[in-house]
Image 1 (tube, rainbow, N blue to C red):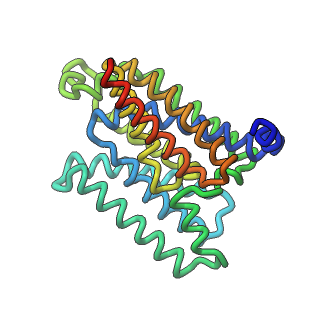
Image 2: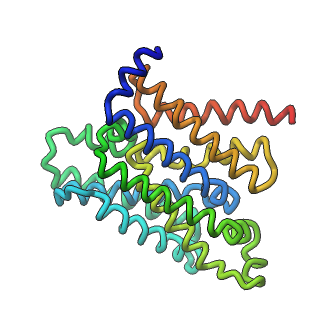
Length: 276
């Protein structure tokens, strides 16, 4: 097994995939706790489906760098989703369902009507489940993922106290002089960046698992926000790394394997939580 892994690690694309996968798992877990506590867990589904629609448009336009279109569109929709869910008659879960279903339907329709790709089914499968796209990253894309991941971590560390306050009690945060709406907006934008990064790793249908499972697993064992966040981040990184190693050795889909490892870790944490 170790001999096989050493042979794989000689290829740059395998090393790139591991680096990007670990960074994406780390970023996803940091704000996963906040989303779960704010009962906005499925925002990942909504934004991932928006990203799928943007990818379809980018593919039709033959853009060499999909990120130039996908990232701004996803960020704008994150802002609209926040506004729609809070200030209109269309509330949280309904707004997410409306945006996610509409974006995915239009994305698939556009790919069918305009795409010139000879392997449409393969392209759709890769976008939905992240089958092999994580193994096709070039050095430029890796550095972009590293830069965005570092930005996410820095924002979370710098505004940790404010995010903590907004997560648990927005009314108290406002009374304390914290601009809660502004920080909710910041959280939505950061989540949009994470979703775009995670598209290559697990695909649009599995992104929510990457965000939610580490947080839920940590909550089975710890009670404080800080402890849950730290354990969630560590667990997410370990699960992503193990999932990618298993995927390489067993030749299974990367995204599905990582999520399966996350589910197993959640089950183990549930059992362990019974004895703590």
